Length: 219
Image (tube, rainbow, N blue to C red; front, side, top):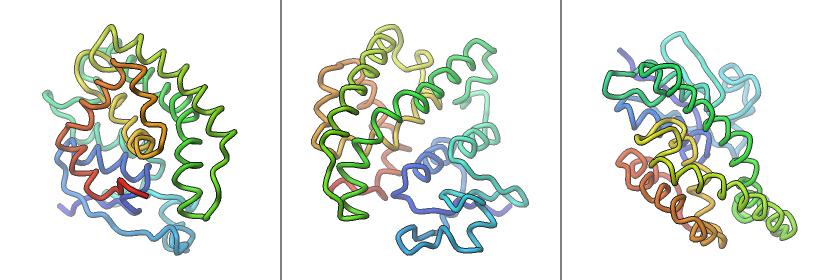
């Protein structure tokens, strides 16, 4: 059987989310490079795979998917075993519901608070040569501090967000947190010891380490 294909660039946060899930389940895959800076994501060939002209796109035989969170869930379902169920779908509706809750929290609370800092400190300066908008950064840090306070309270009750073992709810936080830790504001996590320990635990995972090899740490 041919390996699944991921179309994108490993530096992309959304591509990294998909690659991490593939690494966690030990699936064979092919990364097909798409040069975002050169505009290849807008080419007719890529738009056939992702009609919005974004990365990643994903192909498994005749099936083509886009949107990284949806791709990630497909991967975790396809390669699920009794010992590796990162969506908790085999453990009952209550456990899978907790994964869903914290997956949504990442998308609706964590990402919107953290991503402006990453964009202003790394992405806009590198890709556009733009100066950092400190007002946006400061406002986002205030919001993020509040979000991390909620995470701290949650992680006082369990080792991971959806319980005492890692799940997609945790892995989903990896891409943007990785880049946030390369900004001048990484020390914010020092204010939240449970959150910091949780993040350090994620970074120690072998699958995370393999994905990190293709992601820059200095800008």
